[in-house]
Image 1 (tube, one colour):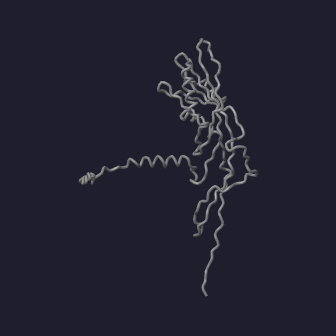
Image 2: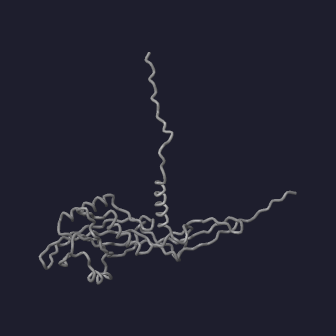
Image 3: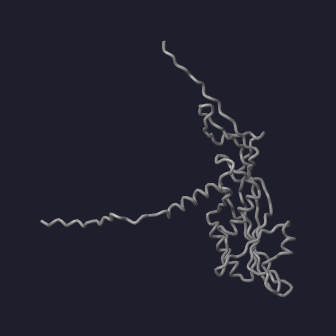
Amino acid sequence: MALPRKKAKIPVDIDPPRIGTEYLKYGAERIEELLQKTNKKTKYFPVNIGLEDLDLAAFEYVEKGEMKLVLDGKDVPVIWLDSERWGEFSQTWKYTDDDKNILMPLVTVRRSGKEKGTRIGEKWRIAQGKTFRYIDVPFFDDGVEINYRIKIPEPVNVDLIYDIRLFSKYTVDINEQDEQVFRTFASRQGYVEVKGNPMPILLEEITEENTVQNIDGDRYFVTAYKLRLQGMIQDESEFEVVKTTRPPKLRYGFI
């Protein structure tokens, strides 16, 4: 009969190291993140979303998000290009060398179109701006608990088309961006976050522009990426706040 093995003693640390307050910073970061996604007026109201918010989300998707391009350890500059800022760029363009030649590679972002929203298919908004219950916020009114009912209309769906162009003197840079884009949209769509609301963004097409030659004889390549942001807009002026009815007071008596 074999002798039973001796159980190894498990060391017990009677004075374990203290965690300290290192964990607190993660809680603070999370609280700050939640506050940034919340309307400052009240934590219960949904936020106002406009076309500028969608433009900013699309720009940051290219500049800092999934389409961010890093070459030789450096971020490729991304510029929001529209007709209003063209005069400004012609005066204060900073991406040039000492000889005023444009530095490359360079990425530009421009909104090129607006269409009827397809985020949830061919669904129309109910007419007359009918509002629906969003959330009930409890509070005490004369000692009785009732609710503030926040009602909002359906958001308006809108599709925004963006034209992203990469300018470079080398085809290897174009290939690097193409590979990154194909990996990003291998699952058909990506997502941008607009004030805490995820919205789909799709790759419509990739086109190769003709090789461009400037007056000095330098050639550079241009590739265009067409993205569709399936977003929504909502106006806080359409929100409605009403009080719910007070429950009846019932008195019971015994005879």
